Image (cartoon, rainbow, N blue to C red; front, side):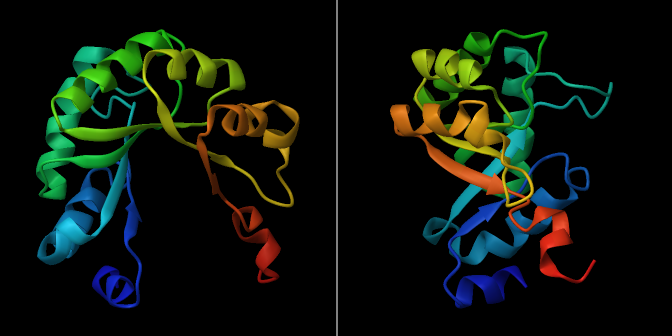
Length: 174
């Protein structure tokens, strides 16, 4: 399916270590291997899949990026999202860790999933944020009210909606 998508013109593939867990990154890495340099890969970090819960401590990020690179069969991740904001770790530390990974060439861009407008601004002050991913659909309009879309527009950050068909409810099939 992934290779057929590429054949039909898809060049952006989004996954996460937690999907599977780990299995999806392995499948995506295997599928994209023949044309890896012609596509963009996004993946996510931020969960501690061994201990449970969130973990965006810099030392954990450095550990899990290596595992994701291996599973994805690549030397870099174009867009590395923090999957969920970790209230125990200042976002400045997270952005700083990603900034270091960018300097090392292991990551090309920082993304955040489900941040507040304030968190976006704090992270962006340390390392430019490229993309924000959050739920947004005709049923879920919070990004219009909570300042997230406004922050993205002001800072020149791309907005990537997840659940754009209302988690399936807007398809008319449920």
